[in-house]
Length: 293
Ligand SMILES: [Cu+2]
Image 1 (spheres, protein in one colour):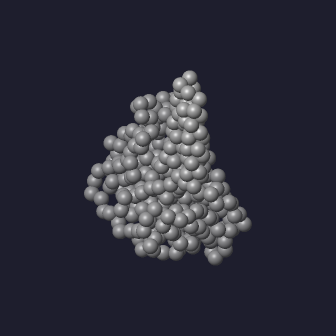
Image 2 (cartoon, rainbow, N blue to C red):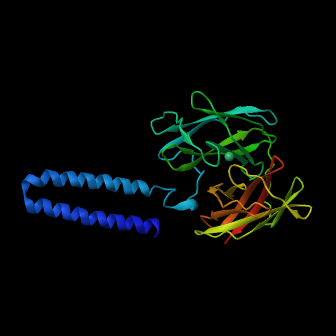
Image 3 (tube, rainbow, N blue to C red):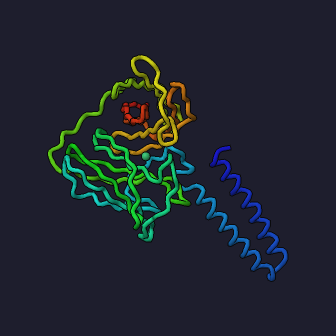
């Protein structure tokens, strides 16, 4: 049963219980009115709970585009984005605040980390994936060095304790004359650091589809090492607005088998995929363009 159907069923059940309570209330008379009102209040409470179960990102599944805004209804990304110059390392500092403006300190571990920070230039080049360190005041810090000027998109991917996983984004400008690059064409293979990575599987709109990556070296399959609790880590960004898609890693293959993810595309268009895998203690990044029709 789908979540939607389950919720519909739950609401229907509530309506029946509710109707019965109201019926009993009016049949028994005025003395029981307050009890009926209490039940109504309880019903409202349940209504709240079911509305909560349907908040975006949960019922909409992995297709709900993330990373497009600096804040949602619960959390806001507050970042010091100024002061970067090309080639010079500088701490990128930020905090996550709640709707009252208070710093959020308690985060759940996802993919072995409490917060993932993805940085990419807006032309979908210069991909970086780092894990900031939380400071005593709850804020986060990580040194970043930008080799080239341009406008960069920064994504903070986290799960505040008791909330859904969310990705907030902000822009960071590295001053100077920037030369944006065109999105590379769709290709099935990418070579990086002496490894050859082949992608198979087709992205589909509104349906989870499986993507497989085979890593080889000198024609022989490579048995990747676990990275962030899985065979690899995949971030998918949409061309045009840099919507951020969560890719769910599938069970570890081992023995040189493919690295697998489930990905659901929210729309047709072109996407850039950043696959990270680890071998011999080093993380490598393979990049692909996929066109979804
Ligand atoms: Cu990470």
